[in-house]
Length: 238
Image 1 (cartoon, rainbow, N blue to C red):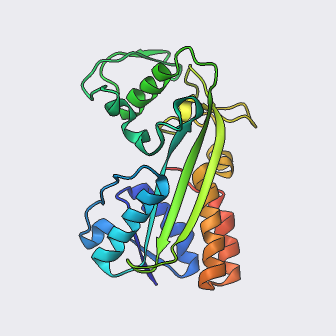
Image 2 (image 1 turned 90 degrees about the vertical axis):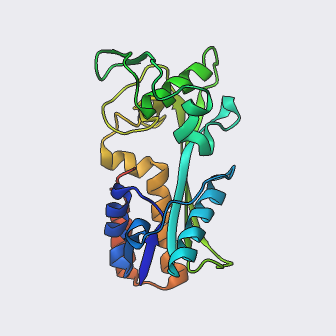
């Protein structure tokens, strides 16, 4: 069965193909079918993921899988949330602005125009200045639709709870990972080895939940699902 991935991220395509092919699903990127990215105007992860999946279904006539994810900080009322990738821009920090971000991976600071991750991290730390409550969690929502008017989408969610630290640590990961500390290990998302991170991460949990739902609701082979669930433990977060 062909399944459209409603994402332009090549890394996600590789990983979803690896995990879903054993279930008899042939995953195709929406761009390969000439489908542009959908708008993401909604206030919740599930609404944005539904919009992206429905857009891909309507454009191709095929089942579609979409995800939406971000980080939610308690002291900020759940922000950045669905605006995680655009948090700095929302706060008026433009791409050509100079910013200084301490970074133990380089041994100093970047004051030459930060990339999006550095700008977003700088904006988050500034927003939490003087705040004692550093609780935060990552959230990932996966939505699979059989067709654009599917009244029963398969929805899988995963969360990863931790806290925000001021000083970034670690050379792995991306996004807010250098500032997101996992309470179980005491390591940031950027310090964790990949396999361990994916056991803990929001996206790994969501993917494992999706695979179980596919087995139960679409009746795929139990052996294939069991292998895919094991593989999901090494899902590369993107």
